[in-house]
Length: 161
Image 1 (cartoon, helix red, strand yellow):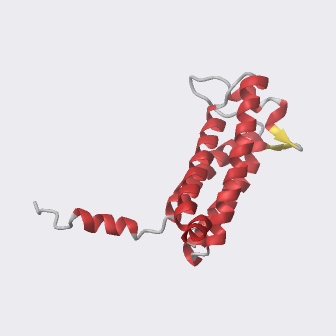
Image 2 (cartoon, rainbow, N blue to C red):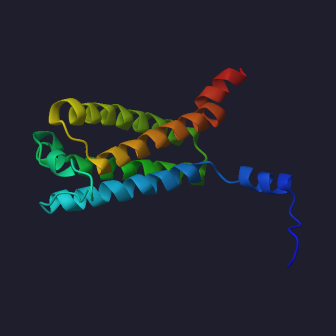
């Protein structure tokens, strides 16, 4: 058995050298996976499986589950793909405008999710655990993008002046 010769400060420095865009990439992939599952099921005419919980069927069959005949989850797939693309481009180019776009689009997604969750609770009177998980992934992406944006993006540039 060998002792770990890497010091804690050395490991921390290595973690700090990882581009923060990779955190967004991982979160975007999680959101994309959830939205893709919902979209595939709903486009196929089914309802998502909620296991012992109930509510997914009610939400999926409600009049609010589609916008213009397109399942809401399809828009989630599109948003997640756009966010993933922006995060990857930001890693590659380090262009802060790409982070700005990721932050702004994730904020728009969070606003829509608050609206949709409000509909589920007060109008549909059922909550889909998958929709809620996607909403939480969006909220997490927004929060992480905001922290990165404040530290590295436009806000930090403005405050340095």
